[in-house]
Length: 275
Image (tube, rainbow, N blue to C red):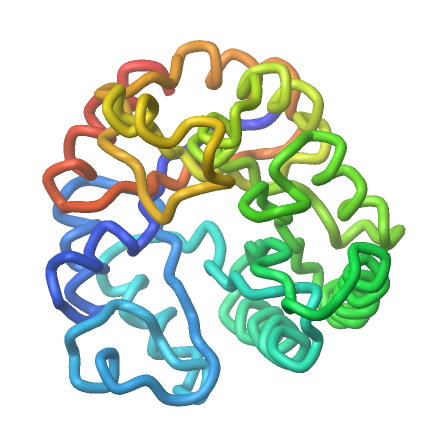
């Protein structure tokens, strides 16, 4: 039985048009213990100009570590999403994300299968995903980094589909990053699914879904970038905490995924009552 801590995914700052360092400072000011930065491959105009929160992996990784150390924050994981079924897009990206994580002491990189190529069959997609995951696992195993597979796209929208991806590669480096909001919007029983993967859980995206969002999209989509403030939506957080607390053998960070700083503040206040 592990410890539960609360963190914040830097997506909360996307609507603020501010750089990574601003997101770090705001996260600390709100009282969070952990943060989950997002990294990208190559160079990107908006973040280079200071209007977006992602960090290029072409930068020195210590840019991430030093900013978080200065703010007194620990890093729960790196948000490193990309299409696992497209090795040309995500192969070198996820391997570099693992190396960045290892260099600055981050325990988890999170990803999902992403949007598939238009011309590939399902059978081909799983061969391609296996290739990408196996190459990534070789890098992760040597460095003690976990790969958190998240429910987010066409194949991982069901418990059976996520398990199929998880079982492609037999590696201690591969685990599950449960996204409560994505699972809910995909039309699944969030609590039964979490219980199913609890012993493989390495990270959790604490994403709540508003009643309005639920009515508009549940069963029609496989996920969403961010949710509402935890406690304002349909997710029963007491039940989520209970499952993780009693079924997960390792320490887990609940990394809040919401859309604004104000929602982030309310999320921390709500979750802190239970954790």
